[in-house]
Amino acid sequence: MITLSTPARIRRTLLLVLGLLLAVLLGAPAAQASPHLPAPPPQQSLPAAVQAQQFDYRIGGVLRGVDGPIADVTVTASGNGFEGEVTSGPNGAWSIGVPEQGTYEVTLDEETLPEGIALAEGQENPREVTFANTSSATTLFLFGEGIVTTQASFLDTLAERAVAGFSFGLLLALSAVGLSLIFGTTGLTNFAHGEMVTFGAVLAFAFAGAGLPIAVAIVLAVVGGGLLGYAQDAGLWKPLRRRGTGLVPMMIVSIGFALALRYVIQFYFGGATQQLPGSQSQMIDIGSVSISRNNLTSLAVSLVIILLVAFLLLRTRIGKATRAVADNAALAAASGIDVDRVIRIVWVVGGMLAALGGILWAYYRPGVSYNMGQQILLLIFAGVTLGGLGTVFGALVGSIIVGLFVEISTIWLEADLKYVGALLILILVLLFRPQGILGRKERIG
Image 1 (cartoon, rainbow, N blue to C red):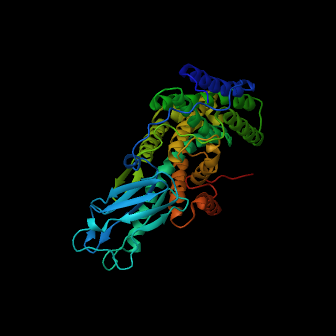
Image 2: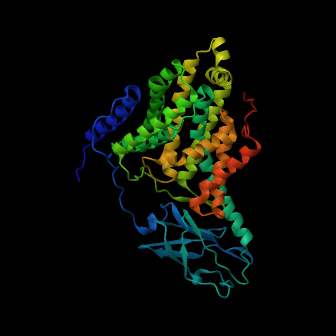
Image 3: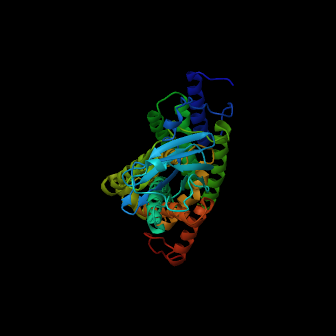
């Protein structure tokens, strides 16, 4: 394999950005290049004991006896060429990170149990634990008369899935808010929004592969997402609006543009899934809930950005102008508001939010792929529609509901069906409230 120098990587990154922007503005084919971006430098291998805390897959449980949680008990998991060990915490919870899904042998060291506490009769130790298409597997050990109840285990699982769902919902909201702003100001249902999500993650991977620190790469990728939004409106949507093109033909154009952009990205990036630097993170225990450091960071970043967008919409002149254009563009123009300028700003902000959402989605999955935005596009639409078309706060509420339902439903459903459940709840809500949760009724015809 040929290893490119840093200047060569930077040139390839710039070719990708310039090629995509020129394709939007001029409709010209992208410059020829090899089909794969350079991968980021490989991380140094770590001992198994250290790596065990850095994987997103995990095996866990809670040890409880007659008198409450059982702390300081050693539990070991081994299998697939890996072995990890952990000690239960003060609340009895334990969690072992593992490198991949599969079957593992879990052993509780009975010699570390407190005096007077023993496993209940018939408890299998060691035992096999198998993942069921989820990122976590749970196993419970019963002690004495077996006072560990199903209800307690269910509550712990519910709390953990709710935290994960809230994190996922805020991640969706970043992209959904941008899509809702675009729909509210232009009336366009933009099916290329998923590719704007992908573009942010791919651009961050490209800049990181060029040797830039990941924080700098993320900032540049978000700026690149804003430039893509600007280029889309300047080169495609504004000319179509000036020609009086209907919304349905524009929607069809967005579908074609999405396909074109998706396969331009695939041409440069390739079909394989790549990892951003730092994609493997430690698990953090908050009470009985375990969450990866990346997901916790994603939750905090998403919340801060969404609050900032809400402040801009409610307290600034451009935010008030945006809401005026979304409410009635003709009346806003008659009032002296530059509607085209507002729409251009909305496209830039929507592109930046989509790019940031794509980066956080790449850490949540984890991984970057050329079609990753397409995979959650329907969920983004579900959040926007569920909350109310064209309402920013509706998109936020709808996305959080979708995220919570997706993650909590894995308690009962197979992981492969969790997205189906989210779309089902969308259908049910729209049957009884077609305008969405925060939308307003409108007369048609």
